[in-house]
Length: 115
Length: 110
Image (cartoon, rainbow over all chains, first blue to last red; front, side):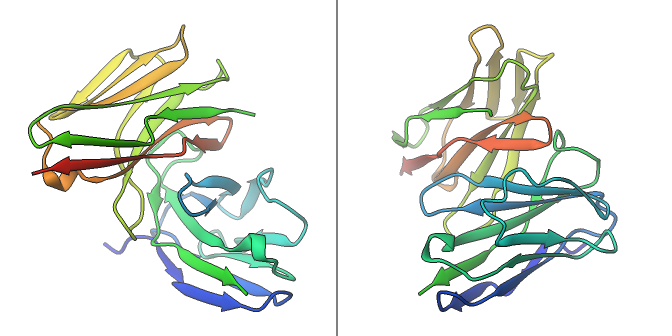
């Protein structure tokens, strides 16, 4: 079946613009995670959803970052008033089981460049 | 929070030799330790994982060892092949957060 998909794959935003990044998890997967991956670094946790409930948002770096998963399937990560330090690859991952202690299937990522 | 350190940052081996990557973690409550492989421009993919009730796990040419007392775990790849060349990330789970290491770029020289 289809894996995790993300769109757009690349996004260039001018500083101060708002952006919305979409994640389509694998069908039936309960858990959904967002990560931020800076160049040459490992992914850093942003937020976790179990179905439609956002159970953990401790990794969101500021109140400019907002994520939702209203129907427990597709998720959107929104960044308001983008800054240059927001430039990174944003990875989405999903897992069939609740919690993070099972294999996470990653999407291809959205590379955000803020100019 | 959890702090995961990974060494070395780069590793070059001859084809057929073994490669070892080591990680340490800080939170003794962490109980799940996956390893992900990320090829250039591609998504991370799980290659092996280990839970805290197990000391070692092996899958063909790949093995992972865990020392809970010392809070470190290692990835071992034997009989390396050129297609093993990639960046490898270790991670440790605390609550619902996976904390990743900074990655090891493995190059297998044919």
